[in-house]
Length: 320
Image (tube, rainbow, N blue to C red; front, side):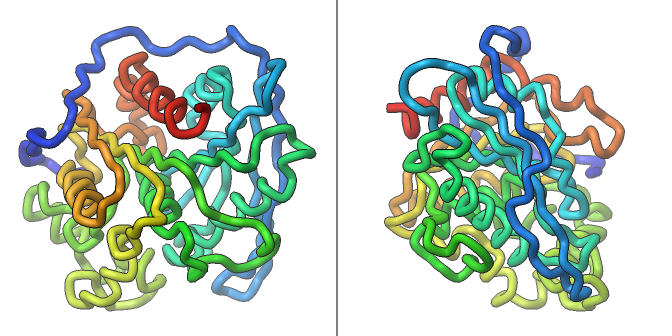
């Protein structure tokens, strides 16, 4: 984690003061289906791996709910689909089917290309089985945190682009109608620009978790030395008129992902004519630090102010 974090520019953003109560669950019954295998891709080592998802569907009468695909964080080295159950359940209780997915990470020798392909594969699988599971396949959003926020941005930016579509259910679309990106990366070469020199050097070193997710484990290449590779890994590269609308949320005290990452992506969205809004959560650190032994860092992210911002956006883009 960074020792120092530069103040972030909020002039084009909305500041959220997360000083209210946390969201509460239990008001709506939600059906849970666990460990559904959605894809069995081949890892870099040549072995097959079954990727699974957990699906929550609210038990409500009337129209079928829209779908939200949740993409967990984990520093590109883990992808625990059981994470953030409380926040996922809250979104499900607001009238959404919520699928939390696994994806390939550095631990299997995989890169961002595999991760994006896995997200798109999950979306296609879920669309193919929408009638079976009881949700509306025409309304799909992606919601990611940290590494998952980066993958959500990549998925939403590449609407209409088949570059990352591979595997099964290719007759189904992987396009999405909304992107919720919480404290995700964008331009990987500048991911540590708000941090102290020692942290930045660690992030940009050959073989770091950033460089391994772009070039693969064991590579000595770096995103700072290979501009083309960095560009290919940047969601902004793929933005077009087909891209989904975004909301970007980041804490101004984030010690893992520079707060300026979301500002950079906001500016890229504006330049490409893609709808986007950035929310800065005052006093908040990186929201997904439970895997680093600090579950309390997520408290500000489960407040009614923050979660209400997310569900309000989903209501506007998916439920209308």
